[in-house]
Image (tube, rainbow, N blue to C red; front, side, top):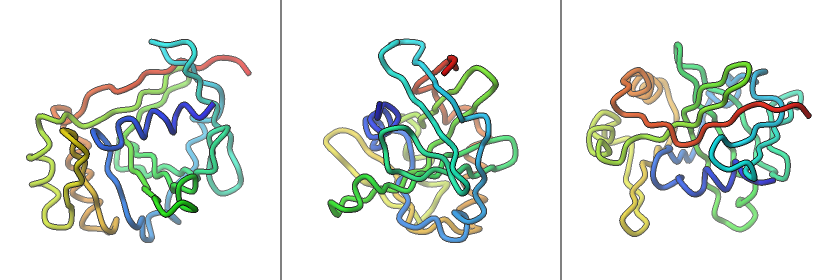
Length: 171
């Protein structure tokens, strides 16, 4: 049932942002009520995500990661505090663009061919993380300046591709 985590890790070096410190934005994050429930992949019915809400954040069934939503205008990013790997010294907080409606949940990844343009927009506050042929962008601290830059990137559709699509099912 750790599908979301597996999905995110499978593209963590190809389409999301690794974040060392969410700064004040973690406490300003919101709980997206629309994420609660059970979601099934449209491509593989065996990939199921079950999200539950707590008082302060939401969690995926089978994971210890805490998740909140960073809302940037019309765009949403999932802030994921990586508690699953923290005890192994490999903590990788992630920031993942998504869209959710009553019955559909879409996870986006940024397009690798536009990686250098995204990095240029983020500036020196970001750095490259490589694993083989795949690169990711790492952000040290999510601060006001970085959020403005991310907001501009989020608005530009040319940077984004659908990574995974899920449909809501009854519990």
